[in-house]
Image (cartoon, rainbow, N blue to C red):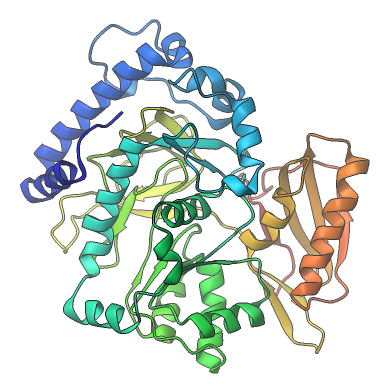
Amino acid sequence: MITDSFLSLRRAARAAERKGAAVITAQQQQRLAALVAHARGASPYFRRLYGTLPEGAVELGALPPVRKPELMARFDEWVTDPAVRLRDLAAFVADPTRLGEDYLGRYTVSTTSGSSGEPAVILHDLGALRVYNVLGYSRALGRFLSFDLFRRLVAGRLHSAAVFATGGHFLSNTMIARRLRTHPIRARYTRLLSALTPLPKLVAELNEFRPVLFSGYPSVLFLLAKEQEAGRLRLRPAFVSLGGETVGPGVKERIAAAFGCPVQDYYGSTEAVGLTFACSQGRLHVNSDWYILEPVNRAGQATPPGESSETVLLTNLANYVQPIIRYVLDDRVMLDTAPCPCGSPFQTIQVEGRTDDTLVFPGQGGEAVAIPPLAISTVVEETAGVRRVQLIQTAPQTLRVRLDLSEPRETVWPVVKERLGAFLRGHQAVGVILEEAAEPPALHPRSGKFRQVFSEVRR
């Protein structure tokens, strides 16, 4: 585990940015050697996987890539703490009253949504959390701090609202709930609002709370930006942060114009908290002193700058309880060819991540009702017995539901159908036909990627 204090980690982070690429590379290699040595010694899975490799420092390229399904199938061997067991964790995340509680008093626990095709349970130890906090405060938010921003934050009583999928131990839920457990006074000025909430009610909640710091999925904040333009939402935020989905063309600009404030983009995952930060030029920089990101082609070979990858290999140098070493993320990433004009020595990237669609159904008054993809998929994923789901709009009022189940279909499908129907009715979508698919979730036939929510309806 990383035992350095917050202040020493911040000094090291500042030194890396100030002294440039050579220091970043040295820190990266030193931390990689330490993580690999720890994984070989404490994780039965990695001890076996690296069994034929020479002792001592090992080149990154010599380490075999790993995939989420295989790691989850051997979870108890993957983790480095023998007190951590998947069966106990399953009971922990099934209990909503334990949201934000540290597992065994020393690990945060989050679950991935399964939008990449396979859900996972991810732990981070306390040392890793200190690293993520340093990266967030020193590099991400720190670049946007100004006297005007500080003044607006104080005037808005530091009210902060996040709009994400709730109802499970997702990363955003876990982190916010953990902060509130640690410092209950934060409940006065911090809100986690559900992306599953019907838009009119969500608008009313935001108008009442009036956050000056505002974050959420791009698909949800894009809909809220339209409400702001129409005058139904009346916010004056000082800063907006986007995360959890890929930002489509023009989305960030539309949100910034609607809310009249800086908008920060972010690329990361439950496995990689603090992976990137956005700079003043709007480009995404990889925190490569703590992460190694390898864009690769279909054959697993590195893709050169300027060329889009087929997938990407991730190494998290801070997480010692659940080593993430050359871990396959199913995102397309391209390294930029030129240094960033902002002057930061950290590599910049362009990301093609989740490509899910916002679904549009007819509403009660004939108006169109937009449904964010992560909101509707969460409704199904949080149903007992569902391992994976894929939702396909095949007609204006038809939604096809593909399921991968751990319990009998005749038991699970009626519950899924009822939950989906109630969710859509709550959003004022009328007459939607829910079709149970015989086939399980599958890769998209044209892109060859897994798309969890998409529409085949031309608009």
